[in-house]
Length: 74
Image (cartoon, rainbow, N blue to C red; front, side, top):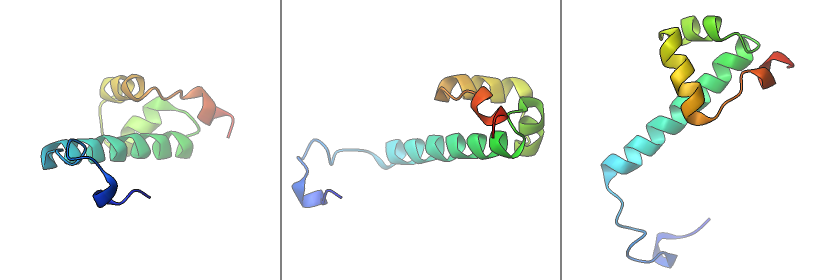
């Protein structure tokens, strides 16, 4: 793990908004992966589980580069 004292000043100039955005995106990615695993890759069921529209889920899956196929085999 890198300590903050080992980082350059430019690396420390990250806004809280940017940090929150990254954390939210990672949480969404994990939630989608968990829902797809729970539904064995069924995107319609995963969308219902996540309480989002199917189209929204489809866009997020593409955005995060997730393949539903890999969850169908588990």
